[in-house]
Length: 172
Image 1 (cartoon, rainbow, N blue to C red):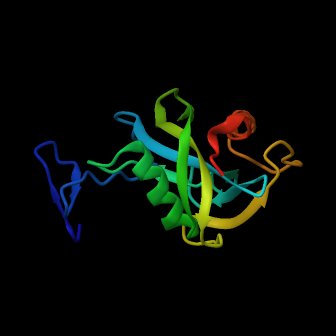
Image 2 (image 1 turned 135 degrees about the horizontal axis):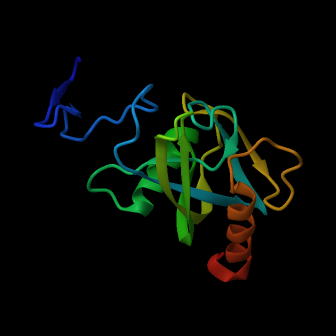
């Protein structure tokens, strides 16, 4: 494969030494959970949502976020993914909760397993825009999702994030 090498276990490696994780791998069970981070960004009482463009949550509304890279803190990953996916800059106010996302095939083998650290953030700059990983973006009422097709547990994540944000995590 162009631009990559292989380690002793024959896992593809990127040029900077990070493991390339393909998702999902048809016919192969997940070897281990993948660590990811997301952020519930608040602006004027609304939270930023984006639709995912890749499995397992293709076309579902969720928080911007993605995989943590080696040497990156969870907070750094959440903020980097936010800016890469939707062009928004924010600051982290605090940790919200973690979410585990996994699936199984017809035989019961684990096909994917993500552990997502979700944070609460405050918008600083940038207008949200769609891109390769965010098909659509919107500012939404965190307590009234109005029938949007969302990722599992998003409603609970947003209720908790809203409580934390309004309880004083914001310094503005």
